[in-house]
Structures are given as structure tokens and as C-alpha cells.
Length: 221
View: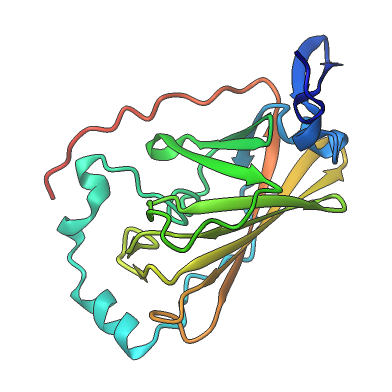
């Protein structure tokens, strides 16, 4: 039995047979295929990420009270978002059905993005990666994330509350012989930030790379 919503097509890219679900990918097949074409590594130099976070009084207090030996990553706990992205970790994309899976090499973080998904119910359980909904805006992939757990934005203890939301855009650019991915991330957290914080990171495509297991080891600080 074949349902229209689950209709699939097979596309051949660089001699590799790729099975793609029409509902998620064919809304923008060229960009979907390009995003899935390999591993994206941080491009040295480019990027306008500023590490000065506009903290509220409460956010500043939480930051100052954070002890480095309390960092969950020392116990090999995956950091969740947005920290999973903050080290400029190599990453890859996989589209399947109405789901996009984004894997980050650092700490083996795995995100699920629901393409054209409905807003989650208010009582949905919170998780370190939150609930992410994606959509295509022309050639730009837009991802909005809610339902995050409290924690830290980075290893230095910049705080993250349950009120935090993330707004990301992913844009492909061709420069000379390389393909680049421009990722803009806006963090909004009214408890800890006086205003939204936006950063830009640039990644370059490595079509022959694969992600390696992080193999975290417990650390005593």
C-alpha cells in the first residue's frame, strides 16, 4: 500500500543511490541533497560569532556562581543545544520522511528536526535538545527550537533557562570551487539575556569525510 504522504523517489547523486521522501525533501531538492552530501567542517577564520552575552542581573549571578567542575560534559553527558553547536563541531545532515537528523561529532550530539511539523503541546517534556521544527523559506532552511531544559550555553557557564528558544537559518553558498554553509543562530532567553544574541558560523563541505565517534572519557577537574 502506498500513501501519497509517504511517496518516495530515488535520486542518483555522484553515483550514489539516495532514497528520499517526497514530503520533506522535494520541497527543496537541490538544497536538501547538497546538505546531505557529506560532512560540514568549520571554516577557519570566517564567522562573526561574538562571545559577549547580554546577561540580565539573574543571568550574571548564575554565570558567576557556576563552577567549572560542575560542567556536565566532564561526566560525558551530551551538552544539548545550543552548546552542541557552539564548539563549531563537524556535522552532517540526513533527511528521511518528514524528519531531518543533524549529527554533531563533538559529544555525539544528535538532533531531530521535524520538517513542517506542528507546534508541540505546552506539556511536552523538555529535553536538552528541545523540540525543533524546520521549514524551507526559499533556499534557506529555518529551524526553530523550544522546550529546552535549563543548563549552560557553553563550558564557561553562560546560563540557559527553560524559557530559551533558538532560531537558526542555514544558507548554502558557492565560492570558487568550494561549497559553504552559513549558519545564523539567534538565542532568546528572557530570564538570562537582556536581548537576543545572534552569532554566525561558516562551514565548508567535505564530501569524502565521515563523522567519528567522540569516545568521551570521564574527567576529574
